[in-house]
Amino acid sequence: MRKAMVMALAALCCGASPAGAEQGWYTGDARCVPPKDDGHYSAPYDPLEHPGEFQAFPGADKPGWFCSYQREDGVIVQFGNSQTPQQQWLAVWSSGANDLD
Image (tube, rainbow, N blue to C red; front, side):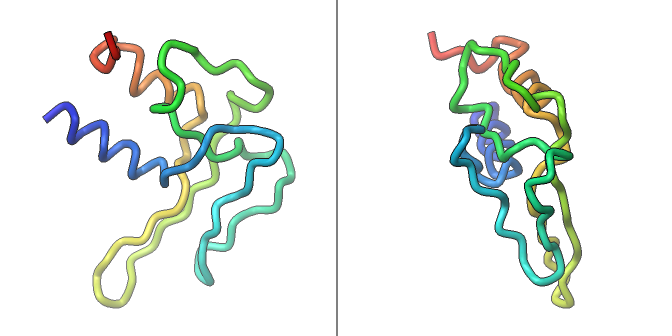
């Protein structure tokens, strides 16, 4: 059950890679156009790639870009995650339940 929850959180994080200088932005689609890299949002972030290291990089306290809508066939489409990288990291690693030891 715990692994399923972690995998669901990883899927919600859109499989994003860690923040970095060469980091690309979410691709989005015609209805969810991602923002320009204007400094208002954090770069895409995957907390599962950072066990044991709370994020303190510049912008780690900025919310992530998030957009969702329901298609005509009823499927909900979601891009991004509105949590900050720090909130995402705490959601996965703060309880110690996902420790790799």
